[in-house]
Length: 200
Image (cartoon, rainbow, N blue to C red; front, top):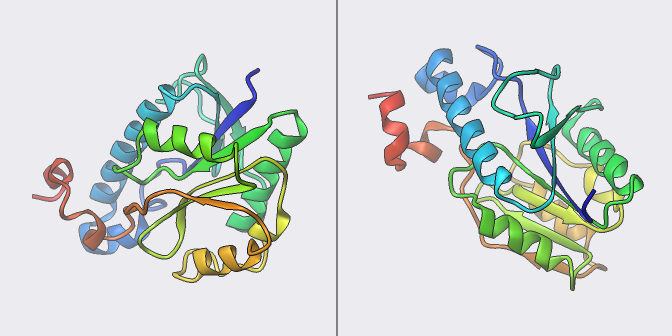
């Protein structure tokens, strides 16, 4: 066990159940293929991070998938909404003794090992670190002690999440990383050359 834990929240890649906003434009099959591509990217960059790595599945834990059991600890998300599920994941790992816990999403091609490392480093001097996403949410969140306010009373999946989160944290030191683009809609992805093969 290291002092650092990296949480990856991942949806089980099932047809019709992931990237639903993308599917409205491209169809369920292309949306699933794109999500699988994003998952592989996330697994690859996470593998390179020096921390204990935890994949929290949305529906059920899958063996023999892209998340190698030798590299990733596998757990199940618990809670009725995204806030509850994140709070439970942070609580579990902080309670088990980790000094720095970070969560990342699984739908960013712009995310890399260096940005995740900067997130962990930012916790040396800050209570919380946040990686802002262009859609008004965030792609990375890290903390050293559980700040439950971050996970409660949010309208998840909307443009107000980051603003409301920062408001809750106004009495804490916050480290902000650079803003990145997460991929939820066709507009988000159409400038990525490597994704064009999924719809051209």
